[in-house]
Image (cartoon, rainbow, N blue to C red; front, side, top):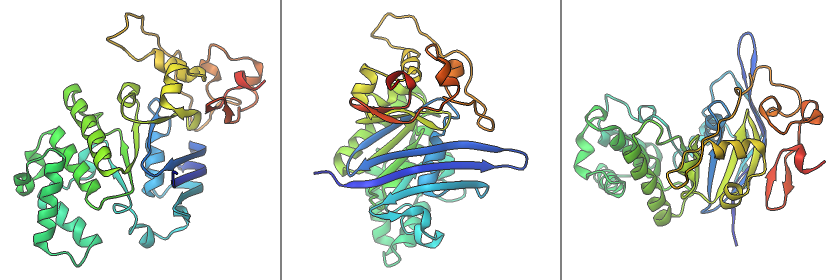
Length: 318
């Protein structure tokens, strides 16, 4: 039996700027069960990072958020910041794309851990906090002796390992990783992904891995959510979606991924993502879609169950 850890219902996020409004996310619904893993993919600007920041309630002040984010029957969007601070980092944690978003350059690695533990576990002794920090570093592939170092003394891959150790320090139920390997070279990227898989096996936390690189997700997660221009295009088990994609955007996205195992010509998605301050009527993908017909240009498709997954495309429910 699986327990529902996090449920998102009809989540919409708008960035209200002085002269215009950006519809960053619209009507997003998904479920995360305890111990499950979900990949979130899409082009730059699809809303992936906005989704991560919405879950963490770290959106800028000019963002307007509607809908529900339910964590164990509690709507996180209704909590005051003081209440949510007890959840952020301890129950739901985030690994940023850039370690600099986590690591303060004027603080040693030890000081980062001490501040974290003292904030959430005031009664902890400094000795115990340092011991825990050292074990966490070792667990993520960083020698415990690096506690005395400052961020500038670490390589990019080492900084990201420290960020992961900090994110897991309080044993969260859910770890959200937002493009955690984008700034790393291919070899270090592979090592960090192996680390995520190892830690998930050992700790059994729920993982949401956000990336624009579909190859990263293939062996890492169980389910995948494809975002396009702030809306869900397709959502289901990753093997089903990868082997038999239904949404035209998913198909084109997969065909544009290079492979060393197949001798195939790479395709590309024509055109550019829409302006989210003024999205097109109907399906947001129709200006780029090779299968679009008149209905696609007028009526926005609903996200509906089609066989073994959810898809938002008129081709499947005429």
